[in-house]
Length: 467
Ligand SMILES: *Cc1c(COP(=O)(O)O)cnc(C)c1O
Image 1 (cartoon, rainbow, N blue to C red):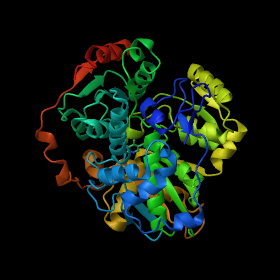
Image 2 (image 1 turned 135 degrees about the horizontal axis):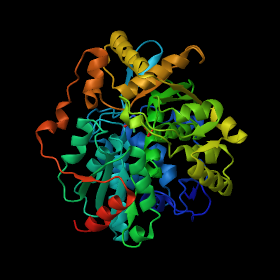
Image 3 (image 1 turned 120 degrees about the vertical axis):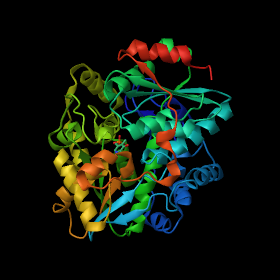
């Protein structure tokens, strides 16, 4: 499979190349040159496969030329054989219509483990082949950081610098990053917002002072391999609910548009998805963009769903590129203008392409709490606030969707990652599962860094390659 940049100015790469590159050299994001498509018969034949086998089946077209079927299958068994639930992503029923897809059975209790555990293995495989080392620089609003750190801690050929906005991640999230005391792990607490941290990371990838001396890699959801791994659980859940004969709709708590874009990819591959509901909190740039075509950034409002407190959504560019007719030069122009003005209007083609599959809803904090209360009352399910935003959106749009259509809300984090918000909403304080161990008793390692770009860059340059 070959991959092209959304901005048309970077060389096409194979799967190994895009996995190691992350962001394209023209500032764009890599997408497959064309979407592989499964027939109905092929999808039907996936029924009953164990998760690792299904993962290998779904991802095979994307890795063709870079991994053999046997190599991919072995990696999938290693990665997904080690989750806290035998089904890896179990489906739980809430009522006749609503389901929760539990994506939090990995080591750091959020859906990001599903992709990042795989990415760690892919890095190891490809770097060994090339006899290279990789310096990962990432920004996190909480969950990416811990999942990435757990995915690469202790690897020989990879080191990681993870930037997080100081004081804006939960204590559980912080401790899941800072208590990993491996010498190849560096935690940087930035005096700024998540968007500042993300902007610094993006800039390092185009800063010759950095790229001249370090082989940089990305773990943010701009990395194609992550999105690819997330496509699998759309297949897993839809098959359980009757695909390919029966359609399914999904509500996805959304920040950077990675998880829900994986649903778009699943639909492109032939999965019978009726609707993808983009669920946002009050940081609602995507809700506005999908509703009226107005994609304009405003300040970030901190909420009880910090992993969705974003100003702009990096992966939205992938949708705009694909839905807008795959014109890299036009996309580059549109994004250049957006980077200057922080606002843009979707083209007609982009707006129509998006509205064919996507809908959106936005949750105020009180609506999120109400959805959490409902899940508990209706089914005894204690859900985290991100999942609450998703469930609110699913309920808000249920009436507008065909009767009898199953609605699956992606449960993106374990409730124990956000115990205060869960307790406020439901009166219950969720306990950490035994498998994460003594998180609050362990020593932490992190450095505080000023909010400007140079501070982060200089720290990385000063500490890279010494592990
Ligand atoms: C990262 C994250 C999200 C947002 O996912 P995107 O792929 O960035 O849209 C939602 N919920 C939780 C718990 C997360 O960690």
